[in-house]
Length: 226
Image 1 (cartoon, one colour):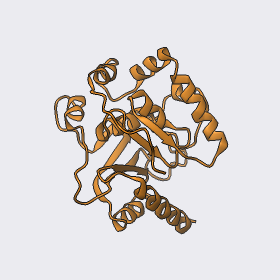
Image 2 (cartoon, rainbow, N blue to C red):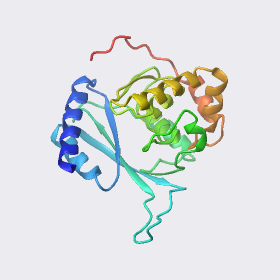
Image 3 (cartoon, rainbow, N blue to C red):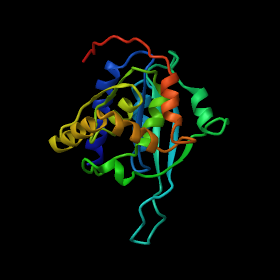
Image 4 (cartoon, rainbow, N blue to C red):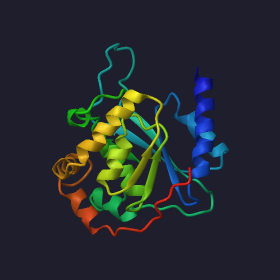
């Protein structure tokens, strides 16, 4: 089963890489069970690994077996498409969010909160705090973001709340229904504002909104090459 999974990952990464701009980057999350194999595949396909971020959950689920240490982290690989083409990194904002100090590659953020599951549950759903930080760190306003394994579209919700555009792909109709309902939910301006203020990882609840107001909106083409 693991070999089949890795084969699928390789095929998917090849397909995604072909659609990426030369200066684009990719984020892939995993655990110690698979992240090293994924990193090897990325390198073999020509990606340049920039960081491996460790997300330390401040409220991880308990280990009921009591036979090993509690799993409290996930790893997230950040890589760019090309070895030589520079990538975008919002160093200034990340430093601001970290008390005016360089942000490290270990992030202490809460696991998913109940208010993020109002439209239904996904077994591997990530918190908006993690996805929002990834997006703000590596994309410009109005950029297109693709998630080929979108699930319940936390990536898309974070992207839209941060004034980015989003395309998600998934094979499970139930998860796409959750995604649609979550999108409809944040089309209510009051709900969108409330969610922006609830997202963790900021110095205060208004910081994200103030940053988005000050961000210059960049003009991108509307067409996607699929």
